[in-house]
Each structure stands twice: as structure tokens, then as C-alpha cells.
Length: 458
Image 1 (spheres, helix red, strand yellow):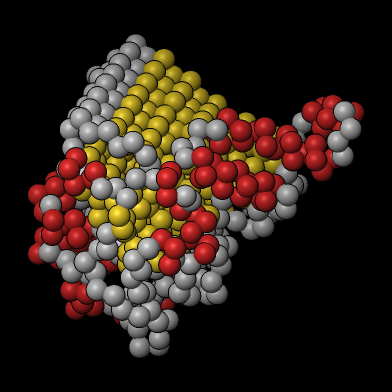
Image 2 (cartoon, rainbow, N blue to C red; image 1 turned 90 degrees about the vertical axis):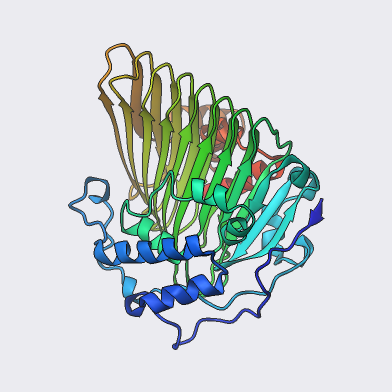
């Protein structure tokens, strides 16, 4: 594997200043300046302009919206958000990245490609030597648009439209960094592809957009990671992830979020799953101050299979609000969702899950389960699973549980010589093990497991 730099020019990083435009005072000229600085093609620049107009004309969601009833952002000062900052310098090897990011990306032998974004732009890129011969495109979106304009125009915004809500419009208008991956028909990527979004500059917002498209019969594993070490001030991330799994293709996609405790993260992540294709999503949510996320699986071809294995752990005053959507648009598809979470201190989670079976989606099979483990009398978990079934020949199951650590299990383990603390840690570890074991890449699995254990230990 040889490191390959992107075409973004290197510039010295610097903190935002009082002269930096805030979101509340931005104009169309400021958006055009972001497009020029990022090297946007004409297509991307026009897309920003249209999205900015939509964003300006669209209000933020309120608690009158069903999916926002339990998460109040009305007091957040969006007008003070800083939407951009000077770029950090490019690096030519992974060893030149900050030590915390080197730990996050793991050993080189476990990956086939890597993109690292710090704040608003990509600072490092590497790709396996075989990518060019295989016709694989993997680059920041602006660079991909210059290299493969037809592909970018085909997939960017095709799964998550800019005009869906104010957050998708904001992302499209202010897009920063992100990644575009296209795997051609029949191509198999042997090792995981990693995308790391990090932040270092206080009070600066990020708008990453990730696009992954697998053509017919292609296979790949992709890991997206959001990480920070707790820079001062506040952080804002408004992200979009679009995934397309072509007919008879196979994608394992892993999302690992471990922001510092000062970050507000709003994200829309959606996959379209084609005929006879296989998709597995492993989700780990640990960090941030407030996390509002939509994870949506659209089964669009007969024989499609989509699975989501997720875990989350809230502590202190963290607020997690998750919405999942298993959307069976045609028949003979299978979706399977297991989302497990633990809460301590005064953390709160809201889970709202919907299985929808359309009228023509006969012989669909869908399962949805949300399990919550409460570790404090002040923590709270709201779980709201639901079904919407228009077909008459289907099998659907959903359920939710909210409970505390089983005293009988603790007593049994203590009778075998463990103290109460170690017994609780063992029970919590067993609660998450079915999900953690499904994480791709050994080093990532170890990293996530260690992070979960630290949160469990208080």
C-alpha cells in the first residue's frame, strides 16, 4: 500500500477568529467561497447554492415533530456556530498523524485504504496499489467529482436528498471533507476501508458527507469513525451518509462514534439494498453531548437482506435520540435489527423504531428489538418500537425491554468469588458481547470493547 495525497493544497491550521463568519451571518457569497476553497466542480458548486436556498427557507424541527418530541434544540444558538476554519496541513504518512488518531485507525495490515479528516478537510489519504487496476474510486468528494464526475453526479444526493429537512440542506450547502467510494461490478475488496472524521479546533462545525456505492456483485467492508479527545468549547457535526448496495452485492458497514463530551452530532444515514444483496450494519455510539441519528434501511430488491447490530452507552448527562427505519418496499426481503444500550448517571436515550411493509412487499420477514440496561436510578430510556404493515403475508416481530442488572446473576457470580463490582462488569460485558463480536477488524473490535469497558467502570 502506498500513501496517496489528495489534491487539496496544504495550509497551516489555525483556530477560528472573531472575523470568521458565523452561521447566522453567512451569505451566498460565503457559501461560494467555501466551494472555491474546496475546489468544487461546477456541479458541486451549483448543488451548494440550491441547498443553501433550501436551508434558509426551511425551519429547524420542533417538538411538534413526532421524531423530535423528546429532544429539544430550541435553545441551541445555531447563529453562533462557526461553519469553517483554516485547513490543517496535509501529511504524507499515517505515522505523522496525531497519536490519538494513529490508535483509532489501527494497524496498516488491517485496512486496504484510509481517509482521515481533521475539522473541515482531509489531511491524509492512502489506497491499496490494486485499487487503480480494479477501477475502485476512493477519494474526498471534491476530488472524486474531478476524477469521476458522472459517478458523483449519479450517487451524491440520490439516497439522502438535500431538500429533506434543514439538516440535510445544511450538510449539502456547507459540506466539508467526507468521502466517496465506488466499487465496480464484481470487484471484491479484501480488507476494510476506513474513514476517520476527527476534530481539534474549538467551536467549529463539521459537515461530512460519505457516499458508498457497490455495483452488482461487489463486496466490501467500510468503517466510518467519529472521534475527538475533548477540545474546549463546543463542537457541532451535521453529517450525511449514503449507501447503495447493488444487486447481489455485499457490504458490511461499521459506524463508531466516540466524540468528546462537548459535541452535538446530528446525522442521517441511509442505505438502499438491491436484489439478492446482503448488508450488515454494526453501530457503536458512545460519545458526544447530544446525538440525534437516523439509521434507515430501504430494501428495494427481492431477496434483499439487511441487518443492524447496534450498541450505545450513555453516562453523565448524555442525550441519545435514535430513529431506525426498516423499509420493505418489495417482497421476499429480510431485515433484522438488534439495538442494545446501557445508561448510568443521568443519561437519557430515546429509541424510535419503525418497520414498514409496503403493499407489494409480500413474504417479508422483519425483526426489531431494543434492549436497555439501566445502571442508575436517575438514568432514563424511552423505547418506542412500531409496525406499519400494508401486506397480508408477512412475518414481523418487534419488542423492547428496559431493566436493571439482574440481582440473581450478580449473586451467582459473587458466590463464585467475584466482588460486586467485577460481577457487574461481567454482566454488562455479556450484555454487549453479541453486538461487539460482529464488529469488523480485530483492532477496531478491541478498541470498541475497551471503550465500552471504560464507560461501564464509571
